Image 1 (cartoon, one colour):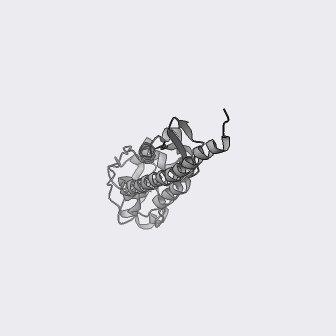
Image 2 (cartoon, one colour):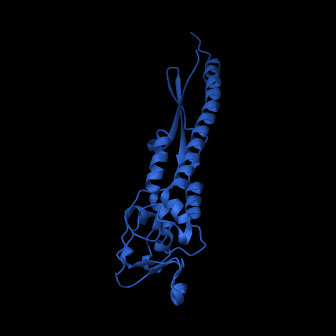
Length: 217
């Protein structure tokens, strides 16, 4: 029996190229949809909204006894730390529309597409506390794991008179003595947002979106 290899390869390759194109389009759409949802979840998160509200924001995150996260963490008045944080996420989450070698099982072809996301370590290294007192730490990590010195923190909408210039935010100050009875409660934030994104993207734990198509006989 003579095997026509060229003819056989043509039959295999032609449908695979068609399926590859449709799989790329579908995987790309899945990725784009879920990244847009990640952005919506990030924007509506109480921590994002509170910090975005700046020095006079209400503590809608429920993390403090009084005051707000912007002045407690000590961000400089007028800065936009949550926009910087989203830029880190946005610039480091990407989709590679060139799949790995397909896996063929009978008349089924499976394509895998890689989605990259920043590690928590990468995010933490780019989100330092604004205070030298907290040098080496990350405010993003602190939101979820705990931020110290809440009982040293005082909040004042009107500022602090001649001491206002010592406040980066203009509404929050840290004092040496523990006198103000404030406390900080942790809350889920970026860690959970990324975890939910990974779950919604599909089999992301294997680093891929998997798209399965049938080869017509």
